[in-house]
Image 1 (cartoon, helix red, strand yellow):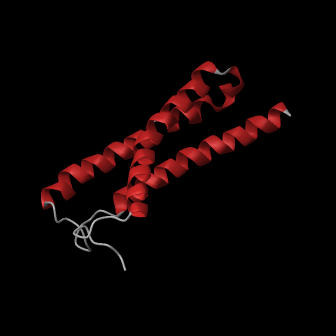
Image 2: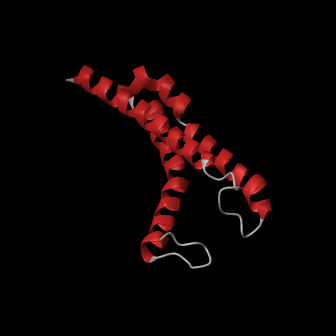
Length: 118
């Protein structure tokens, strides 16, 4: 039986929210720092510099868009803003998609550069 906000969260639900929120908020900054470090300070990654710089800010831009949507659309609906009429599901999914684009781009270049050095 799913818990509604009036019933509170279970321990598992509270941990899910805490660690999920932490990951959603911290990954864009980590992605930015990782990409900039590899693109600007690592000579082995010169061939991948352009895609790294291009995708460095994608997760951060998606996070900003998600927060803007939350503040401008969901929060004005009030404290009881949950359920099927609240447009809350798409922004986090697009945020996850941006994280996947960053991860796949980085992983592709890791494999390419690894093959060249082998």
